[in-house]
Each structure stands twice: as C-alpha cells, then as structure tokens.
Amino acid sequence: MIDRRTFVAGLCALPVMAQAAEKRSETQRSERTLATKHPETLRSDRAANSPKLATPDSEALAGKADALDRLTLPVWLNGQGPYQFAVDTAAERSVIAAEIADRLGLVPAKEARLHGIAGAEITRTAHLAELSLGSLRSTNLRTPVLPRARLDVDGLIGLDVLEDRCVKLDFTTHTLTVQRARWETMGGWRRHPGEAIVSGMSRLGQLTFVDSKVETTRVFAFIDSGADTSVGNEALAAALGATLKPGQTLIPLQGVTGQVAMARLGFASRFQLGPAIFSNMRLLFSDLHVFDLWDLRDRPALLVGCDLLKLFASVELDFGRHELRLQRADTQDQRMAGLSRAG
Image (cartoon, rainbow, N blue to C red; front, side):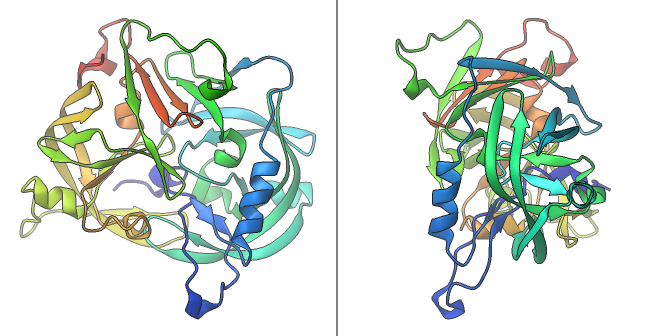
C-alpha cells in the first residue's frame, strides 16, 4: 500500500474555480489553492506579503530528508520554534499541523474547502502573523490547519513563501537555496556543465512543462517536491496502452482530506523532460481529483515526484522565469540508475 503521506505536500493546494451558482461560496485555497469568498483579495494579499530576503541575494538553508525523501527545514512561527516543515514546490499555500497551531494559540479564521488527491473537505484555517525560514520572512498569512498525522511533519512550505523566487533543492547536501528570480537579476545566468534547462509556463497557478513526453506521448508535466512517487492520469495510461487488466492489483492512495483514490502500478520505457531523459521508470496511474481540477482528465498528464527528482544532484525552480534546471550528479551511483541523459 502506498502511504497517504506520499501526496501530503505535493497535492495540497489545488486551484478551485468558484461557480456562479454557488455565488462565490466561502472557499479558501489550500492543498493546492484555497479559493475564498473574495479570491481576488486573497491573491492580492499574498502578493503584497511575498517574502523578502533580509540581506543576502542568495541564502542556503540546511535541512534534512524525512522518511519519504522530502526536504524538511527548520521554520519559526511567530518567533517560536524551530518546527520541521517539508518543502512543497507545488502547494500554493503553506500548511500548519493542528497540534502546532493549538500550541501557539493561533487565531482561527474562516473554514475552507480543501481539495486533495481524492476529494475535498471543509477544514479550519488560522491567522499566522509571521513565518520565518532563515532570513526569509512572510507575514500576515492565512493558513489551512491539518492533523499532523496526515502531514507527518509540523507543516508544509508552499508558494506563498517561495513564489517569485528561484529555489534550489539539493538532494545531496539536503539544502534549500533561495535567491532572487532571474528576471530580477542583472547580467544573466550561465548554463553549467551537466545541467538541463526546461522552460515552462504558469497554468492555473502551477508551474507546468509541456516540452515533455512519455514514450511518444506528449504530456503536461508538473514538478511536485512534496510527492515521493510520480503519478500519471488514465489518459496517459490509455495512450501508452496500459489498460486495466482483469484481476490487476489496485493500490489505495489516501490523501490528506481522508478520501482514498485507487491507483495501479505501471511502467514507461522513456520519459523526456526537456533535454533530460529517464529510462525504464515505474509510475502509478490514477485519475486523481487534481487532474479534474486542472481540466486534464482527458489529456495525458504526469505529476513528477521525488522518485525521479532525486536522480539529480539538485533541482532548481525559477518561479519568476517559469524555468526548471536539473543538475546531473557527478558520481555514477545508484541515484542515477534511471537517468539516461541530462543536458
């Protein structure tokens, strides 16, 4: 069985489109975006409270890998901590464990509808005056609150902390480097040896890469540092001829909202992400709730998790330029077993 925590971070802020018939019902974006009664105000507040680097233009923060290979870092909340938060480059909002929120006495905010991998639920949110990550500070945040047992960490670091920045996850040293987005930096950037560069776009709030193919099928690819397993939708499975066979074992995927999605184990001989090529990769197939929210049920799509990302020495996401940089590991160790070429 694949543990529910596999997708805790990566599928934790799904974009929600408010329907006119619901008269903009009170929904806040959480688990990959929480849409509120006034979503424009929420987005505006988030932009106004974007984190700022205190002094250095670049800061490397020491962390560690948890049991699921997620990068976790010490975070201070309202001056108290440190608490261990997992980095989630796909979650639009940061998340706090309920036990931590109660311990800090955070002021409750309105309930919100959370969308996870298998469904949605109404959950609590709280006002957070300040979140500090190294010298990075975010203020006046409204964060969803979830039981720690679902998160398996004290919280999640989302795009409300990392947006408009260039973030580099180093899987060798377990560090997170945060710096200005390249469009803010003068002089340009040089491509390094062994580095693959992939240009993307912003689609429904997510950094999306369309220069991607699984075997001969073009796919929408999403980088998800909070998921330890890559998942394709059934449209991709059909394109690969990987139809469900009678008696095939199904794997339950339990999300943070408590619902369960069923998946099945699959295989692809080749996955191309820009100039990087992966060979003989295992992945799961499931029509997750997230694919419906992204209007991708009928178009091949793939969530790229840490099982593929950690084949590289580092993964760099520039949210300002909508760009991905993959740095090949220098040593040919077991982490490179599934990687054919990068750059």
